[in-house]
Each structure stands twice: as C-alpha cells, then as structure tokens.
Length: 238
Image (cartoon, rainbow, N blue to C red; front, top):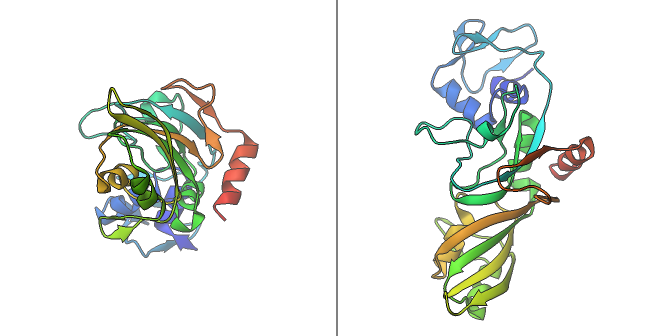
C-alpha cells in the first residue's frame, strides 16, 4: 500500500505538491470518503479528484525537453490567464514541469507526467547540477565572485559552494555575463544570490539541467527525451 498522493502523482495527474494541495482542499476522495495526506490505498480502492475517477491504468509516461521562452509561466494552469509551458507542448497527457523557471527566465525545462521521476529529480539529495548564464547590471568584482563561490546567505539559509565564472563584461553598458552552476533549487535562488552581493539580474538563462541542454532547440521549441536519457535521469536521482 502507498500513500494516496504518491499514487496519484505517479499516475501523472499532477506533481506531488499539487496533489497534496488538492487533498488539503478536500478535493480527493477514497471510496467516497474525503482523503487525508497520510491515507494509504490498495489496488481495489476507488480514488476520485473533484468527483472524477482516477484511472489507475493511466501509466503511459511521456517526457519532454523544452527551451522555455520569456513571458511564459512554469505551471500547468495560471490563474491570471498567462501562457503556460504546458500549452507549448502538443500532447493528450496531463503533463507538468519538473520544478520551475521564473516568468522571465529562459532555457532548459523538463515536462512529464512521471511523478516518480519528478520527485527524484527535485529531491535535495539528488544533488543535480543546474547551469545558468546571468546578465547582470554592473561589472562584477573578483571578491564578489569569491563570495558567491563559497556560499552566501540569502533568506534563512547559506548557499552551498558553487562554480562561478565571469564570461564577459561590457563597460559601455555596465553589464557582466556570468556563468553559475548550482546543485540546489531554492525559489529565485540565482537572482537572490546576485542581489546579495549587489547586482541585479537583467536576464537569466538555464543552459543545462544535469546533462540536458537546448542544443538545436529555439525558444519555445521542444523535443521528446529518448529512453536512454530517461534512464540516465533516473540513475541521477538514486
């Protein structure tokens, strides 16, 4: 027997976090009884979301790699009616993004209906490297790069040591291009790291997630992950 939120997310209906929210809102039932987060289910149990039966045979997994463009939100639905990353992909499956990129951030984003893989990739213990290229206001100094490399306090935690390299700078526009590689995934982490040492991020692109990049993909374009790539992602999360 497994917890109901894990069963639903593994079937691809939504991410674990989104399923837990539905449960807390009383929208999930087990055998016509309102479900709780700790409830476990067996194969014979009848699960419904908003009164709609959960199809336990819905196990066709799909995996997409998107070059996320600017001005698109990393959710399945948006209350403000903005375009979502899900709307960019043609599929009849109920997919969702693995993690999030900000509205104005571009680059590598995985979308899937595989809840198990999503949970593996997003778990802190997976320690997966994310590579970003940031265009910042100002010419970054060596001492500030050193601070970022060795960990800096943002919000209520200190970031882990990471790779930071100045790629180029432009004195006329007073901007720098900086590559940064992190293994964490806190909300707005890269932007907050630069802000902590006095630089505003003007543009941010995720160049790589683990071994995946957007080679041959223009902004807004996507491709299906190969079985070999999916297997490799699973191996990274274990």
